[in-house]
Image 1 (tube, rainbow, N blue to C red):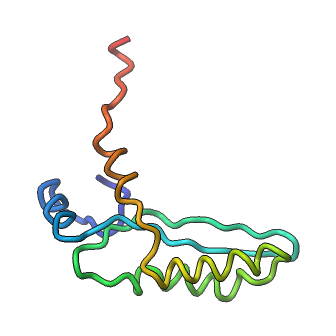
Image 2 (image 1 turned 60 degrees about the horizontal axis):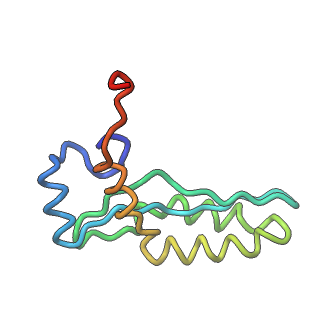
Length: 112
């Protein structure tokens, strides 16, 4: 379970317990624009423990969108408010996707 922020040293059992208590996996959105080009992207995945707030996790992405997102026409004016709303609303919940990926059977090329 490496590559997911906020899971430092947690065992699978601890993660499952946190998920049962209301924890989740989220991504944050950000927008960067330059004149007629706007780029809307997602952050890495973050693990949010039950009862933990996301403001600190989303702060950098929110600021980036706030200062760099508006400058593209027309998509900067469309993407930026959406990114801000997503981030200020706690991020986009991707728990089901992460769990499907983690629990999916692994392809083993040696099996043919």
